[in-house]
Length: 350
DNA sequence: AAGGCGTGGAA
DNA sequence: TTTCCAAGCCT
Image (cartoon, helix red, strand yellow):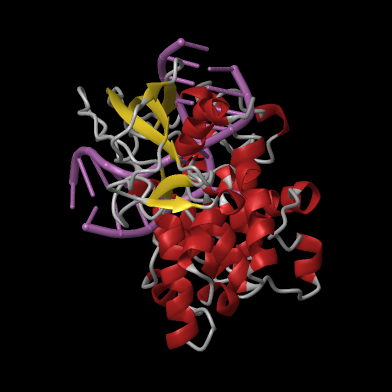
């Protein structure tokens, strides 16, 4: 009979192996009573939703440099925040980030709620993020359940039920293991374990602090868990993007509608994206097609774009010309930056 | 409540 | 090349 998993064993491992991150207060500092800044924990957790630590780090540093407090962020221009988020993906997060910052600033005096319920009432904060802020920022014993914890719990207790059906069961197991003290360190420890030891493909069971109590390891099925329902195949859609420059060298761009794909972001005018896109040139001029197609994969479809370029002085029927001096390709979402990269050689001087 | 919503790195 | 998937939320 094996001993059940203990949070103490994991915390002892975390004390020695905690990863360093720009938003993290290391366990040794935390033990001295140094508390994390709820603003930084909130910002990091929103950025980390479905996003890797490696991708988030630079964005976190940029955001906290530009906007050191939630009050600073609330006062920012929408376009500046969307531009700073460009490339990170899931742009609804950036829109909700601003909404949340403004609610906290104008209705809550710039102070984040200190309960899970209060946090979860805010835009962009769901079950995971409310638990993460509660535990990491306030040391409340709220259990986090993200992809890491799902995998660790499924293996530790050999849960064969596929996701997402197994979520409630995994949540109960996660809550049962969450200790009353050091809840913040514990939450970060399970996620570190999932990210570095209990990985999806080749878990390093030999050096896992929970190798003894792990039921999946005992049964030799660790790599098979968690089981998941099959996912749908991605369809291929096509589209046409138009890159237009006027005689002054300005670029024709449009701010996309708030809702939907790439909502609120800058982009090139273009057709709809479907099986057989209808051309929608934004100005009446001589368009030339770029030889190479742009390929990009979104969450639920593959996209192939034809890129059309032109120089024109007639008034376009959509969008706004952005002065060349103010145009930064890095302000564009990635698919639109790819379009620019494909088109730019057409506008280089000879 | 099932599907929309980004991106880049790893295998 | 393709697939998987990473600290999910919203509708």
